[in-house]
Image (cartoon, rainbow, N blue to C red; front, top):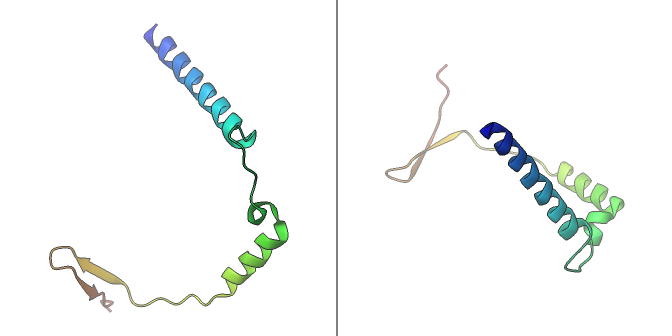
Length: 78
């Protein structure tokens, strides 16, 4: 019988949390508006294309010794 109350109270708390979140964020209870950078699809596509065009380079894998705060480059064991 206790499981019934636990499951019911969890479901109720999630429902209340969802309603509060919807009211505050989607209905703009405290005012405000959606920024243009979020709502403009062209801006998002241009920004995404710019980020994808950057070269992605990385150095060798590194392990940090937490005691001496010194980094060691990991060499392959081939």
